[in-house]
Length: 256
Ligand code: ZN
Ligand code: FE
Image (cartoon, rainbow, N blue to C red):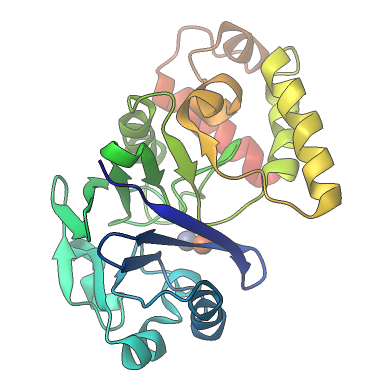
């Protein structure tokens, strides 16, 4: 069983970088490369040598560091085949069900389109970790920039069926602000109230509320809870298609 070390660090204005390191083989992967300089500094701080970048999607705030970091480290860049044309330096194109080895660690590709057309998440079942980029956030979800509500809802459902203890790492950290919105959708949710209080405390200390877990998100994240009777009632959408209810919650968040 892999014993991965994980290093999470804030980068750019509101992204989060994550490094995973397999001590047995010295393999090290970065989830996305938001900023070359900050990524190289994080590697230096840990004394790790980068072997892979696992790209979740083509947006600049996830790929801006690719070219320089690849030149400096010779790492292999992996990313979604569907967005290969807009991922600088991509070496290996992946799609649903593909597996990638980072040393002894094994990541499975889950296609999670919606935020972008080809967005992928990387699931490491043995390590009970999933990297979801901008698909799912702590108490939030990504904007529907290149997909509709139905597409994104299908993607979220793939993440919702992962074991509840699975740790969730996201491309950004907005938990505190997301809780304020979530409480307008489901104010009676006791787990959400607890989460909002914790997130407010962490925000004061400048600490991230990440990683979250799939179980915690299922209990508190309104975007995963369109089946909640309280939410359906509040939105006046009792018995409607879950993807439609999800879409309405997303629209309200866009206006919030
Ligand atoms: Zn994005
Ligand atoms: Fe982003």
